[in-house]
Length: 392
Image (cartoon, rainbow, N blue to C red; front, side):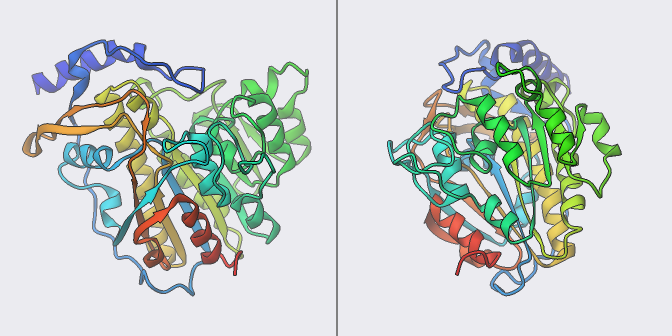
């Protein structure tokens, strides 16, 4: 117990140096302490066994939930699994596979190109959002779902204008065009979006107040995470709950991600036509960039709890396909030791950037069989589109 407490004290002291950078091309960061390569979980959580609907029944899908662990590789998953006593919520998925993540401009993708591939089925150049490699705008699955009357939503732990969520909503030549991305939320009919980034909606160079514009479109706008519980479930929701990115889990974010995921599912599932929801564990990536294992594992466990909310919903609903994957791997993470009986893991990193390795894919619910094996990241888009009958 004393060792676990000491590790957490060091973790908190060191975390100030690994908070997410404002630039989208994250710089190399020097590790503040050697202990950042070790994590011991003081409070593992129990994961029940869920009964999955038939994974090869492709006729029963009404809803798709895409869950993206930004930067999540196989080692990230297993580090979290060891730290949680050998089992995660995503352990319930009966189908697994791999995804290739290369972009049109590089074997190593960034989140913009990786997100765009998942959102649109098109390869593009690093840094590009919602456009193909020739900078032509391409329609996203979220936009296609809206056109067919499905409800749509996104929940993230970063700014809603950041690369991954932007890839599902915007069309810009550079992921750094945050204010332009924020303005494009007004061009959509997305039903629920929850994350940070309030500043780009109200403190803008063009003087616009996008919050006022959202309210005119009928959105309820909530700017505090603890106020989400009071949201009107019958109205559209813009949850801009932080001026910038949300804080890391260990610095006070608490159960925001699983609770916001549960709220989005409650609101979107009111539509009998179905829904598409994207949920991102955004800061797994930043922990990988900073080679900080306690940050990484706590973000993974937080993301897994949100996965649990999605899987529990899908197990009850029986018409929901849940897909858990990543846009790329970050950090070149390796597990060099640990102790399963102590919920402890020892790691090493080969990079402070993204790598080109394949990333895992997990699937639960009807239609899950389509996600097995090795596939391109663009294939996941087409499989989701077919599951929702948006693509023949």
